Image (tube, rainbow, N blue to C red):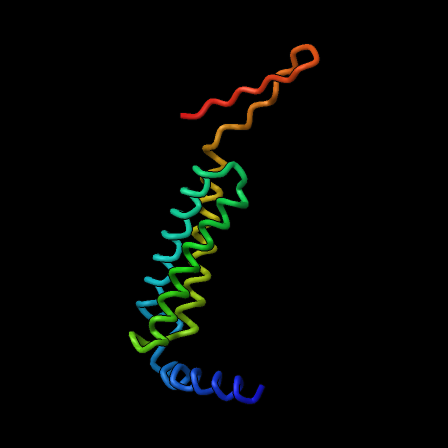
Length: 130
């Protein structure tokens, strides 16, 4: 257990030292927020085309938005940049905003589900897609 704690402190030490030059409202934070919002809303749109359940579309958007943010921070942690918990926080906020916008638009423009028509003892359902 002590080894894991020591390794965690070792990994976080450069990030905390760099945090002084990493303001919450820096230019790169807007890029993290915007890119995550665009990726999450796009992932939601693709998920909505593939699945009827909004939960699956939300999950696909969240996976794309957060996955890209986490991948970027892992690359930074591997030495290809400057890792930042603040960047990751803005990725999470952007993903949430993108999902909210995409879900709201979907609710406004999606046609209501068709109700099955009962004919005698059998049920007939028709769904049109364009």
